[in-house]
Amino acid sequence: MKIYAVYNLKGGVGKTTTAVNLAYLSAMDGARTLIWDLDPQGGTSYYLCVKPAIKGGSKSLVKKKTDITSYLRMTGYPNLDMLPSDISNREMDHQLRKQKTPDEALEKRVKPLRGMYDTLILDCPPDLSMVAENVFQMAHVLLVPLIPTTLSLRAYNRLVRFLVKRRSNKRLKVLPFFNQVNLNKPIHQVVTKNVRAKHPIFLQEAVMDSNVIEAMGVKRAPVFTFADKSNEAEVFRRLWAEVKERSQHG
Image (cartoon, rainbow, N blue to C red; front, side, top):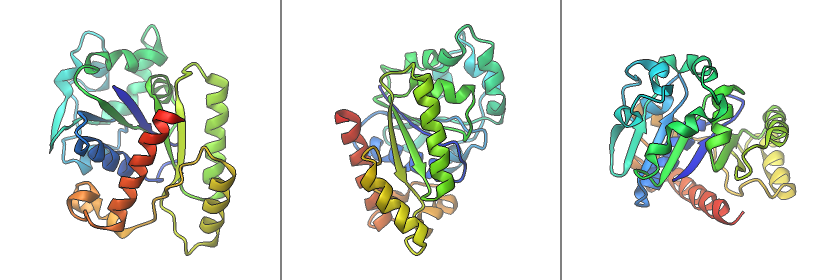
């Protein structure tokens, strides 16, 4: 099971729309796909029309004795299931710290899912917490959407420094990319061009700021279900193809 985490220290950078659309594409590829909404705000659960609730809350979810498969929900899309959010996820750090190996607890919890799914996509809350530590430990690929501004790059550099210092998960591949790009803004033009040219770690595909993507909140669905022929849908297809290629070959 390949695990992709969509993460950023900053909020409002398009993590949830990215996670939902890439999970949908993974499922349409024929891969048995699970998306896990770790954010207590429950954006992914909302987009996929799944009730944001876990019986017993995060305390029950973290417990080893609880069957994690009992929390799985169908989304209505072929090959795509989800673990929904719960408002108690805001307390998950506290629950994780009670475990014997706090930074490995979620990795252990998903072990029973390895034979059930080919792809696991994590939509992560925007903070540097024990939940984030667990994500860094369990993920194979860390997708980092960035708005092309100096503050966003500063947050990314802070994340990189943290990961280099921590680096217990040697397999973790970090793939940053630009999201919500507005080429009418000179700073967006300069940053997207120069950073991608100087730093090959950045994905070449960028996602534009878009009313079509914003409409996901109204449609409560991935872009492909209501705008399959749009430029936005094509960009996500190319982004997913690049992510898979880079994940395999560095």
